[in-house]
Length: 154
Image 1 (cartoon, helix red, strand yellow):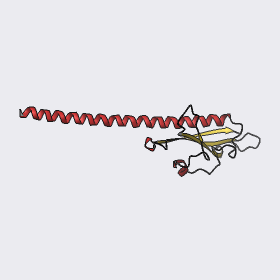
Image 2 (tube, rainbow, N blue to C red):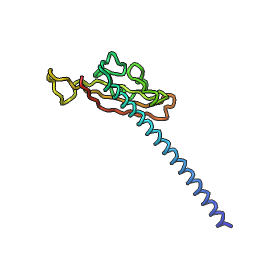
Image 3 (cartoon, rainbow, N blue to C red):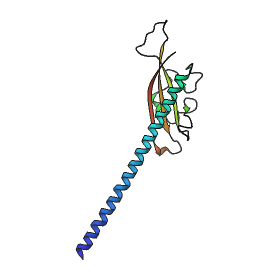
Image 4 (cartoon, rainbow, N blue to C red):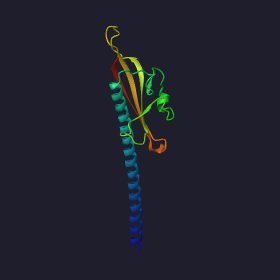
């Protein structure tokens, strides 16, 4: 009888431990899925911005709200959730993110490094493009920022 009770206690503890481990693994998998979704959405925003810039005839910072002048964006701005607004960035296409939680912006960096300053040639301009995914209604769902470089002859 004592052996049976000890065996029952051991099996109960084993069941509780396995259940707890399974619950933790499910949470880890959910967090990983959310992280990947955020990164892919931010990457989609960057690609949409690059496509828009490629097709644009002019990349005038005064005409495009999401185009920021050289030196106007700091690392603190990029990390700030409140800084990403309609004044500094744009919302991605609703087909990419129906919730409107993904935004992009571009920052002019000037003449691309390593290019010629010859006045007879078309200058190659360099830009930094940022995409950000952050759900302000659900801040526990994380955030992701993706940055790429972009060059265009102007």
